[in-house]
Image (cartoon, rainbow, N blue to C red; front, side):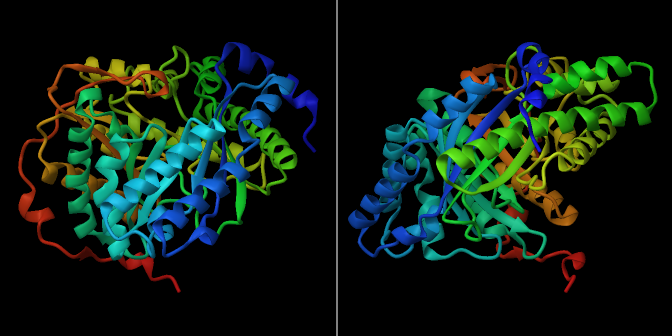
Length: 454
């Protein structure tokens, strides 16, 4: 059983080491909102979200105050909008209208992000999927809190290269549509391979069709806590290092379990999962890069970085799954460049490149995340980078993702400031050699042989 004493044991973690519950995410099914009339659809979407999430923010604040645990974000995820709009939406503009309804509902209930303006196209695209994808640049330019994600591949189905090619264009168009704000629309857009149905983190959260009508998922983050704990392991063996990470991850996850159970009880919504992801922030002392440094590499990107990250990711999962029966989502270590001051320092020192980040994604929880690239990067080059990352996820049967930000008007060496949790990013160089013929072939890369496990 979880008791208040366990929370007291984390006081130093909270007060001195940046431990927080990064998000309480309320997943809401909108399947019962489907209508063939676009106006009626938008009415039903708005009504259901505002009713189901009416008490979400207040409840999160109450729990945080009562237990002394910072709960940074309260968020909503919905059924992928391409499914909900399939009957009523006949144009990209209709999906923009849906996005605006979602944004209006998010503002009404007071959450900071709403995820699920999404399509699942790992094997093929319906007309609705294409319309939603085409609407993304305008939708993200004209809303504040809506986040979009597209699942482009999976281990079971392969990679939909038609969708990959289209998303290269969409990312570039989204950058153009928000160029007056340093292309920030791309910070709300992520593409996946093997996207999980229960991820509480943005921009990739959506409410999977196998989930309940509503569900509470909680994301906990504590890279600062792990960093502090690892100071005691300097000069000691890998066995001691691993045990320390596991024990620390266990304590962090127990906090998330407590918050999730309380939120579930008070909102009368079933508890889904705790996602233990070491998600950094720009705050000093809240960095995954600092954890890697403490393990023994001078900067992320130095030789040994991928091995250190693999060790960290695995031990975090092993500690977390002992603390809750329902650990899910992504759960591991995130390596977003703009959101981690240590990663920024590594880029500026010349230690960390996109190619090394890609190698690191083979063993971490997400992928190429929050990386600013030159605004004149070709859409086909963006598609090629996406394809590489999707291949890593497909072959390794893991979730991978790409959130690239081609900052219009900026080039390598310049900085872009996004603010808040999104932080700042140095514009990183990309390989300038062409891949046009590859991404323009069309069709689908088949699933790997190990996908046939029936």
